[in-house]
Amino acid sequence: MAENLLVAIAEPMQTELLVGVSHELNFLWMSHRVPRDVQARLAQLGFTDVDVWAQLEDSKKEARAWVKSTVGLKIDGNPNAMSIISRVLNSWASASTRGAKRQEVEAEQRAGDLPR
Image 1 (cartoon, rainbow, N blue to C red):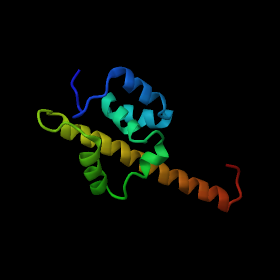
Image 2: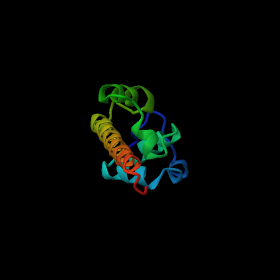
Image 3: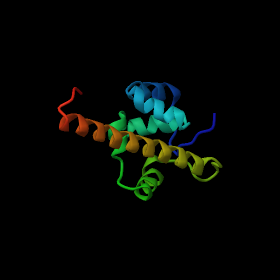
Image 4: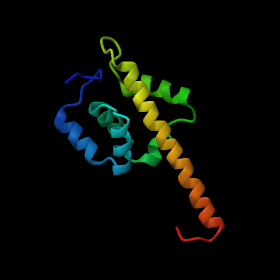
């Protein structure tokens, strides 16, 4: 298996880290095909639920810079590095959209005194 991180995370540790990730966030990462070792690193950095992941940064540009500087992706010698960054950003954008829609629905429920 290709290593996507500068500092690899062993398989058993990846499994341990990913156990703490919410089903919703796991679904997003899997549907965007974020590599497992990158998912584990994101979990290691504290991103274990979709609401926290959605709040990573305010803009795509800032999120891209954060991924490049903080996740520790191996760029040199990794022909998939840019596509991995894109996959991570797409999962973040999906989480942000879901969060915004959820807040909108909850606001409508509160305004209309509807059950939540």
